[in-house]
Image 1: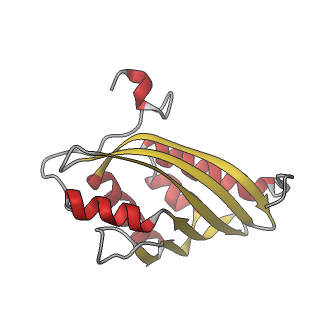
Image 2: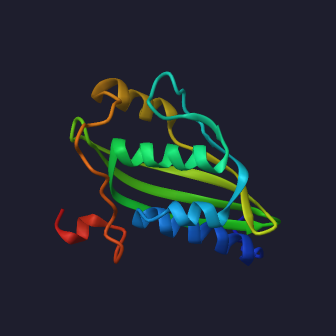
Length: 167
């Protein structure tokens, strides 16, 4: 990538950033319906057999179910995105995350990359890239299921960093 950050596609950037801001607050159902194309494709490049998440999901409703599944598995302590480029309907983002695994109470800290495609004001695809072997190993060590009776916890909407709230 060149030293010059290309953010010329402000409209696509705004769509992606609005969706991610809603997701970081834990208030994303309406945003999914507003910003995702009905036949959107979401791919998390991770072996779905090695972890309870991963693979390709197609369709707005199916993607929403996957996102709720993530919230069942993890508490989100830090979820911070930064847009790296937005050009010709392609938005690239960096994600910094700190997650608490609900079953084991262990933390996962890492980063990821997103590549979004936006057409006619709607997200038509999202590719998410983590350090897959590291994330898969985390699940092998700590289990992958969902803790029963543990409601989803949203990030503090005023900061998106729960470390600052004393947690």
